[in-house]
Image 1 (cartoon, helix red, strand yellow):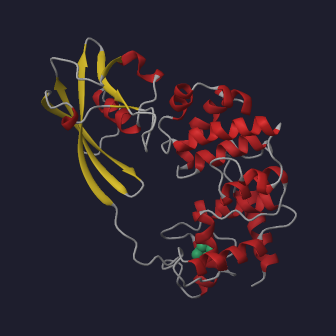
Image 2 (image 1 turned 120 degrees about the vertical axis):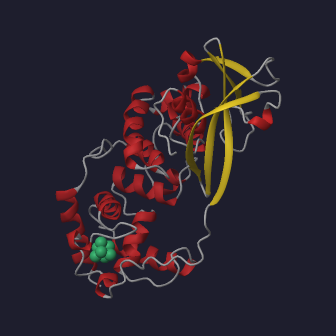
Image 3 (image 1 turned 90 degrees about the horizontal axis):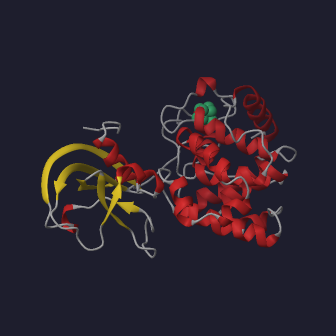
Length: 334
Ligand code: SF4
């Protein structure tokens, strides 16, 4: 396989077709790092409004390190996977101790919350270091280019694709090349129905030559997502809503505010259903029903929050969605 041709064609295509995204064009490692962490498990369209707002609020590692946790979580609320925000703050403190953003791969990789992919993306985009960044999109493109027939999650497939990616990454423009490959995966070499007729490497792609572009990458025995039904209660009193806060040691969403479920407030009388929506967390699909309810006494561990002050506290995404249903702004799936 002619790596020089593939490289050149992908870079030329990127120069012409890349999307205009707010984190493109900067070499500032702080901004690149924030964008890469936000983009982990979150779609580009969802990240865009958060990115500018977050950077306006925390423009450098010092501001991020000094932020009160509640403020940080409130700025992150809606992006999900909140350990990312906490790790950002831990890493910002480490960057201050180091006297600046680290400039070599091992030190970048050493920052809390930074894995192989993110370290390679920052090292290549900010510092021109030749490291291949392999995310899900890139793995898909490479597995099709090489017609990799082993299960994409197997050690052998990963090792083979890693070797190919290391050879392929452009030594002079590793940052551009990594971004180009990610862009190709995000916009052309799609998981289903890849747009091969618009692909710059269609002539070099083995999967396309074999007519297997829709079958690869191979994923054997993928377990279906678990389905869970639950109800959230909206209990209002004098312009306030009843909520509880997850403890600091909670495994998920520590410090976030939630609406009660019926089992937590057995004394509540549950009234009409307002709406329903779906929410996915990792491998679980929640079907959530939002109901009104009323209570005489405030149960232990619950607090009344003014509906006008809700934006000041970190609310979980499900609580946000449930409250949006109440005001008729939420995305209803029913
Ligand atoms: Fe993906 Fe099709 Fe391009 Fe091959 S030709 S890399 S399958 S878009």
